[in-house]
Length: 208
Ligand code: GLN
Image (cartoon, rainbow, N blue to C red):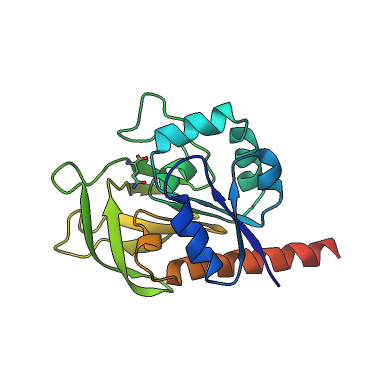
């Protein structure tokens, strides 16, 4: 079954994700408007600037449809700023009263690794995927995980932010602090594609 996965294309590194998903044999499209959101089986929220994206989502009329779709169980994958967007509750070190889309019961700290190590790279062990090359760029980390949230990866000992949670999953919602689209390694995107396929399959069965 060919599934269609959207990449939220308000701002940020959209092209790299469309390319990575396309290589996995799914139909990858950009999403800027509510009608485009209606047409996808899952949505990837890319890295960029979460404050800019939430502002653009608000003015383009996409914020409420995004909230509704994700609350209704659409699979979503948030990368870096996308993780901030998917978090519920207050964003630590966010803008004053920074809004989010929600869907993932975690609290994140924005730009958490601090100025000295605003960006770094290193190996990360992701449950169900294996060791990946983690690229962190002004990345958030997860400070609180809700009871339904599975921790998929923490920072290795000796690295900046050692022990901090940097990959999580809650049902069909996946998020990473790091950027797999910049590594040429499609395994994390592959995990998301599997989630979308399983979900699209079960939706079809329910309709029958
Ligand atoms: N610091 C950015 C934010 O809070 C995220 C950076 C990124 O996505 N690379 O939105």
